[in-house]
Length: 318
Image (cartoon, rainbow, N blue to C red; front, side):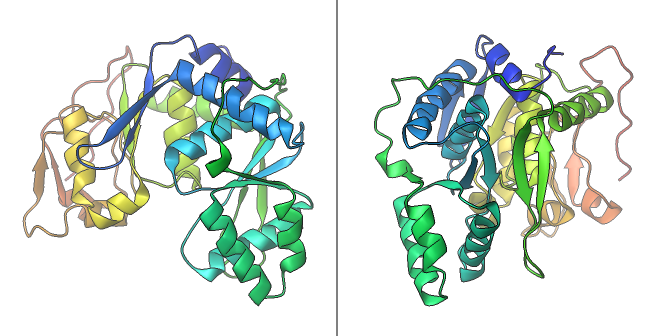
């Protein structure tokens, strides 16, 4: 296990390790980004953030639909001591209203998004009388569309365990969105505790469809996997929604050893078939539905022993 006390130390240590993050865009479309390339790209994006005035401790709203763009700028912010604030993109006015309410709550945040998304925010803000908040954002926006050169590196900051790593906001569907402040120390403790229990290691292969604005998507299946140098695969949530069976098909193809989903994800991935689906899941050692009905939907062909010195976990009852 890495001897790291902050996320900054994690990405600095990992940039020399020969491992990729694989972004899956469909059944036959994927892109590999090495840890070294991620570090280089993050520093290049950090240069642009610092160029528009973002400094250590400033808040940066991440309003993105693309997983690769999200992870690049997330680590750019971490390296610069800038605080990422992920917000789900969504397709409804409620999501845009949530963003404006969070922006007002944060004071004067920066925002990283695409032009088309930002224009929609502007049109909505005018409709609901929030033009003042939008105009403040417009003076502190960086559009992904403008990112054409990342050859110049920004200046990283040395983080401390007590520094804020990022802020997660509640959905805000029933009240004002509430922010949960997570420090580097919080995340590192979460990583170490999860790893001690589940024995994640660099021989593992993970696959996730959960959104990176969700704690399981971001912390569970990106940060913890990255800290453990797992070969992680990330597929867009909307692809899973359209083709839920593809999740298990890809897991079988890449020999995923780590999967996770809410119960509805397991049900959705088998719903089109009246009989239990059978995928070659003999590599999978960590995929635990929360009830027996979801477990009956999937037939795992084998549950091998852990690739570690600890005792293997007993398989879930069928």
